[in-house]
Length: 248
Image: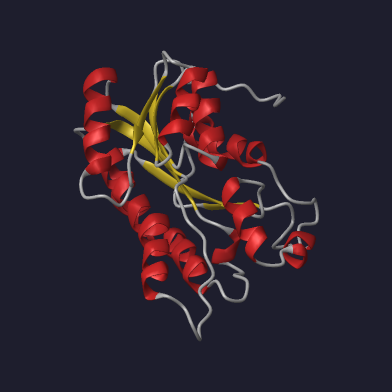
């Protein structure tokens, strides 16, 4: 159990990719700390299980974060019912092989749409005065692959690198109203997405690069909550590595 305890009572956050993995963990920890959470994901059954953990605090919506207007409509309904947002977390993402000699453009573009563009859409929505209070904090999920992508995954690495570059520009734009945006760069974390990737290729060498071994969602979620909290009020435009030593 973590020794750091946050109090988000009375605050409201939206979390994408909340039906599994690190997004689910962040949503649970925010609710445990007293926040009202709009949990977005594609798997309705998993979202129902998530909502059952904190039925008075977690509101769910099953949708594609790249769907035209779907995320905005869900946020609008949540804000009308609960009040304006204090921040957001974009944990939604997909990973797939895109070898240069035989990659699928459709797959590569989908990776970019989910991992990068949907995150920027979320940031835009959270920082609108219609949906967010003054001084929101948003965390975008990047990856160590933004700095050191493995062979055959240029699209994923490029999408995550785009997150890191874009938020630095955005931070300069939104900082005048006190809004903050930062990213976390996790290493190999045991989630349904990484388990699926492991079934399709040999990941032994990748895991071995983690000096502290592979991670768990709770190894990353605490850093996310820190970046959402007032304890990080003087941080914006930062890319925070949480990788068990992968980039050491």
